[in-house]
Length: 341
Image (cartoon, rainbow, N blue to C red; front, top):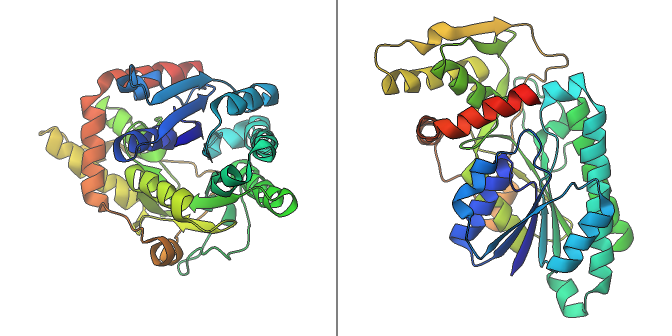
């Protein structure tokens, strides 16, 4: 089986690449433009693996994407490549529209052109899986959860661009019969996450005795999903999910940002006795349009596909901290990329 992954050098993408190579017999083809959030060290361990192949390419380059798909002849396409940081979408929204909307359009067109050339048996097995975010649904109050039928209400250029991409994927299915599945996930955390997001930034700053920035008063609530659990869910969806369906993937871990960072600081204190990392917490001006709360109802994917998170937040958070502590070269490379970005 051949699986083509876009954005496989990024955070969630690299976790998926490792999962497929370790847990399945799939041959993996990674298409990535290697932008600032991708780190070549993330997949260095795969050098020489004859089931892993890398193509440096931008999904905004339709002829190149079409050429790669035609050459690879994949059974599945798992589309993760995206601009993903809300702060950057506030500062420079154009790139988010280009990559997340136009890039997804290119992937759909290339996949449709390829699908139309396949014999019936191959068409029956082919799947295009679009990986999206729960941020397309906007913000929740103190109660309630997102479900697959929650209306879209994006708040940022990032979430709006992902919402647009979601709609394109469904349109290509309804109009041209492209066999698709779609997932929307909650906030991921784990190894190899670029330190612009809350947890890796907090770890990096804490290790360097720099302030740990928290937006507003830290009351915003997120559902935290360990990236390895997410990778397992994605594989369940593309291999067992019903065509045309959307599945929400969450970690069943709702935490206020401030409480999560205090938990992280406790773990760092245990790893570095004599330090009190919570002293580094610094409240900064809140993000524009900052959604208050996200929470996901996992019942559909659990009921239909048998998936549920395998890790608790505490064990996954410990594993995440230990990974960053054990990979200073990876962190240093990210710091250099952040300065250049």
